[in-house]
Amino acid sequence: MKVLIGYLQYFPEKGNLRSNIEKVNELTKNNEFQILVLPELAFSGYFYTSVQEIRPFIDIGFESPPAVFLKKLSKSKNALILSGFPEGARGHIYNSQYAFFPNGEVRVYRKSHLFYKEKLVFAKGDSGPVLVNYMGVNVGMMVCFDWFFPEFARVLALKGAHVLALSANLVLPGLGQKGMVVRSIENRVFSVLSNRTGMEASSSGERLTFTGMSQITNERGDIITQSDESVEEVKIAEIETDEAENKWVTPLNNIIEDRRVDFYREILDG
Ligand code: ACM
Image 1 (cartoon, rainbow, N blue to C red):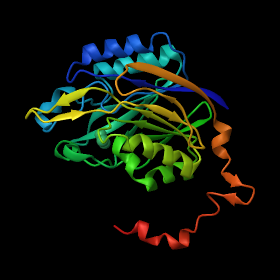
Image 2 (cartoon, rainbow, N blue to C red; image 1 turned 90 degrees about the vertical axis):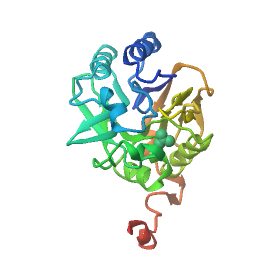
Image 3 (cartoon, protein in one colour; image 1 turned 60 degrees about the horizontal axis):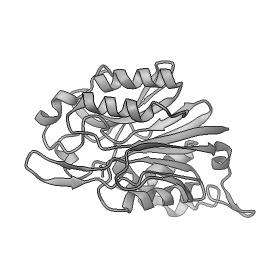
Image 4 (tube, rainbow, N blue to C red; image 1 turned 45 degrees about the horizontal axis):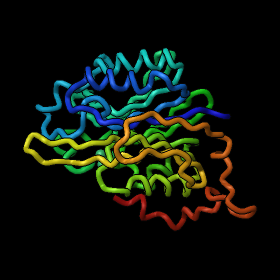
């Protein structure tokens, strides 16, 4: 199955939902795609260090201005759109990713591996790995620091992912970009990394700089499309998802069948 898949990279303004929605609307206006990935916490901004600060931006039940906008965008583009957002549910705040389908369906994945001061604000995700299917394409949902844990991407691949869709706000220079190339190679899947750019300060003045360099990687680990560290843009690539179903790396090596799971028991110990 051939599919046009892409990412959006930009510099969201912390706490300015209206301006961020306008920017995303402008950046997506002239692009055609079937699947689009936006960054982590794509409209609220990232560096909140208390529940109080992030409260005005929490989305409960997909009624927030960004959710209403993304629902409309998904319909008008006839595309699956994935984006990070702060989710309020069950008395907790989760660092989540939602997937909007053109038919109005919404699926949610809650970030499993919290990074740095996210631990002061968010609850650890309880959804487990989520795979969504759109037009025959299996998309594995991931949020930023999840990339660091190869077991997580492996589980998505074992569930049948053709593509890993990572909504990110990466700050450790180069690591997530290299990591996602490896996640693609070791699972023979495509990956889309949507990262943000720019700098953001916490309320105490601590600064984080985000590394951009969003990328699309094929199942052999070739980066087929990449942005630089600061540009704001949408980039699209056509991929053939059948290629992610072929797990043979030589005529005698299938990377799923060749696993020695009897030697991997420690992975399941806490
Ligand atoms: C991250 O998980 N935002 C690095």
